[in-house]
Amino acid sequence: MSKKKKYYTVWKGHKTGIFEKWNDCKAQIKDFPGAQYKSFETFDAAKKALDGSYFDYIGKSKSFKSDLTEAQLNKIGQPNYNSISVDAASSGNPGIMEYRGVDTKTKKQLFIQGPFPEGTNNIGEFLALVHGLAFLQKHDSQRILYTDSKIAMSWVKKKTCNTKLPRNAKNKELFELVDRAVNWLKTNTYNTTIVKWETKAWGEIPADFGRK
Image (cartoon, rainbow, N blue to C red):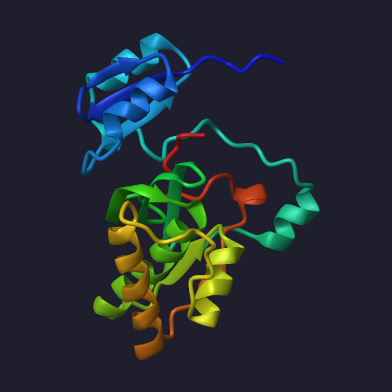
């Protein structure tokens, strides 16, 4: 089966516009701080998006219908909207990576970091989770914290970032954040409840960048 064609809108980059190839889009966002981009299935959709705001489109997904049975859905229940959700996006492994946190109910963006020129999705999920913990602590909030990454939850519990990505000059800034995150976990206590987002029941986590 041939891969479905996509169109890439770049709102902020070395060059802005619509690009028909991922490599062309990637060239515009690489090493560009705060790059804004997203893929679309049609040229018209990409063009319409370009005339609007990036923040009107990230995290937006098609209507979701779960494949789980009614009994399974009832057992899982509904999300707790008194919460924040975090997620990461990486174009490649390693590749350009960024992460963010949003209000679960409104999807209002609370924080965002990146894009970093070389990272992995697991590192991004870990950093997003620690950033979320620090954010809630700073605001003395009792909200819970959602992530869709079991690996990130495990790393946070162990107070370590167990990545196999080698350190180099390209990812120096990213690993400085990793070191700060690990140090934060080792020097702070928190009461925040970290909960796994039930993707199969609820669809993509609200912090999802919507680039799949």
